[in-house]
Length: 81
Image (cartoon, rainbow, N blue to C red):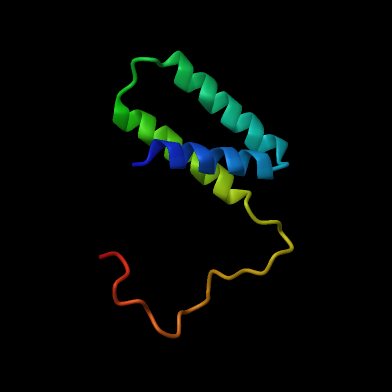
């Protein structure tokens, strides 16, 4: 995992969001992480993924089209390899 890339992605998402609820939750998550200085790496990774998911949930406005049902015309055979 490239830590610098992850930090950059999280900072970009923080700057892009205006959702006070998401920002408050992320702030609280960071406070909890700092308080648990001796947490395991796996716990830390899980908490970072939860923070990223919180950002992702607010990445799009409600008036944007739902693209979750789109199907690729030509799937990439190399995806995941």
